[in-house]
Image (cartoon, rainbow, N blue to C red; front, top):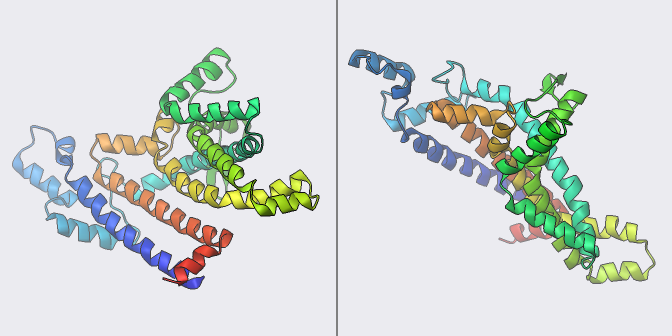
Length: 325
């Protein structure tokens, strides 16, 4: 097990290093932030002074080496626009994005797995067919359109839920969260559902496919022959085995929830990292964009590592295959 983890850890470090090169040089060949920061009427001396102040007068490889050495110390650069550390700006917005992503993931799992198991156990029922039709809609409908429809129906027409913002927050271990207040929970419900809809459909179809495959296995038939209750068969024998692919996909999709929550945050004016990154791209604020992308890459790598470990715990054959290489 330790060899498996060490190998995965080394692969993760290599991925982070390679992605840091791609992200840094990819961002630095797009546009010139000086055009956004300096008055068009500025003379050459002012332009050169700004370039020196921002560290843009050095060759790209020197800028990358400076970025890399500082990143190892926890410094991902200073925002051109705000004049503050990019990491600080992102960390300030991160709790809102993480809260939204966790709420969406919890909603997708809590709804998707039971619906998928039911549809797999009773595939010919009308309810199961309705569930699968709904999952197709969840895949097909654009996120921004669903968000706008939710606002129109539940905020404008019915007036049940607030349309924008995060609502009241309370500190939890020093981090502001909104799900512990009634007002905050009402603000969280619609954006969380909007963000979770695609993942909910994915989890539903995965759970159904796993159920349809496992329900015909010999150990399920043997459990039924022994007279075990349907509840015990589902929760003890079936659920554990369908969770192997579901855990893998959920782990990867959680990174996607964080990275691609930009649309939902924009539609619902949710004060997370999405709004910050959109503004930074528009203003060519390179340090903030690079910091955001590197944090996103790091999150994906960590989540992948955790998923691999969980996968090996659920299915020991993974460890054996790695050991045999």
